[in-house]
Image 1 (cartoon, rainbow, N blue to C red):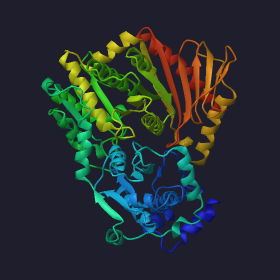
Image 2 (cartoon, one colour; image 1 turned 90 degrees about the vertical axis):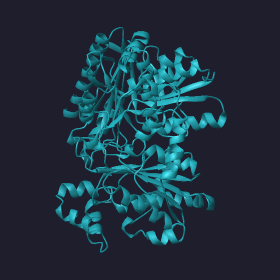
Image 3 (cartoon, rainbow, N blue to C red; image 1 turned 30 degrees about the horizontal axis):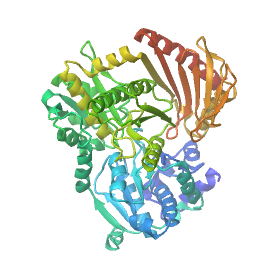
Image 4 (tube, rainbow, N blue to C red; image 1 turned 180 degrees about the horizontal axis):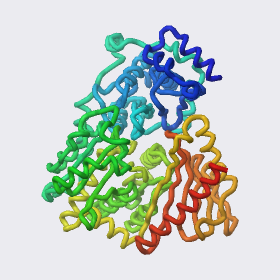
Length: 578
């Protein structure tokens, strides 16, 4: 399609939403091209984009289009999936509740039942609800931690996990067959209710989910430690469940950041509602100082990611990385389960290919196997399902460096509610020993070595839109077609190309097949054990670079990390500006 033809189709549509027509009249020509030159892509992570008019934007018409594709996917599987229906939840973003109802109204045209949460709820509860209600699918309206101008649409299958690539491809095929999203019909809410094609759900399901979370508790004495917690939902869905989940395990000293307690689609107190970033913790740190809190917690808008800050040896609050929080959770859970005789011989943990190797070292110490998956929690969920079906391994923990953790597999996506409870319990355990979580992390480094990682994302405005996508492809292809022989004085020993599915040892010329689905990721292992990986983001206009090192001391690790990162990013700059 050409963007001007699409523009004319939309501007001349008599029933176009009035606010969208107003936006179109105010667009510059460059804005028009970016909004109309393609349709918003639906992939294994669903779809995510800026709100606004056009097929390359999130609006009621893109919601109708992708939901029609989902409906056709459900219809091809028979009457029973239609009866079991779809659970729909949404976060605090602009138009989230409207999009949730719009999805239900579209499903209703196809005779598919929808269970819609009456108010905003976290992504992990959506995953749980799909499983608990035995629904055939789930929809989550969210853009996770993206800026306020974004929204998104994630699809879940009947086991509560995000769609695998094969199912996503089928839905994409149905979506692409729709010629004009502006002409898709919907049913009205009152008609859906009358025909029993729409039910609203909420508090009853909350209590069932919270009972499951409480069942994860490993230390019944946590309440006796007088642990003080500051929590911020960052204007998102976490407020609905996280405080109650903490109280259910006996943790009563919880202070909520009042300015960030209520839903706010503009996320007005932060530049980005991302718990990975220090600025998101500014208010929580102020509260922490005022209350002398032991632990600061933050969840992103849909409460699937958890950020943690703790006091260091100087008494200052420092933000833990996702790798560090994951290591603390893993060590605490495995040690307590071994102590209680709860650690099965066939236990396994799951982590992504760009997550720290510290987790593997910890798990190995407890006789637990570590399995790597591709980036994206759907791959961790796939493995959990495989192990449960075959009864070959016992899942203990899954995590990724981007602040996502899963403890109990009654949810099949990352779950900040579970993680908040367990990291608080770990903090209480260390406090009983006269230690902080920071002290516990130091002990892990002293035991296993100083693993250090970082993530660099190219996020400049030049990488947005059509030109940005082309530039991202050029950067990734440069590393694939012209791989470096050495980085920062260390020879590149192995290259793992997940798009070709091949691992190549450059020193021995040995080639191996990587037993994972194909993905546009390249990972380079250096002879000194360091590594870096290159991956285009599936949800944002970014290309991401991941780095990992291990040295004998913290200073040596930091120095080595900076050397490798500077070397790689210098090569990237040459690619961009040549």
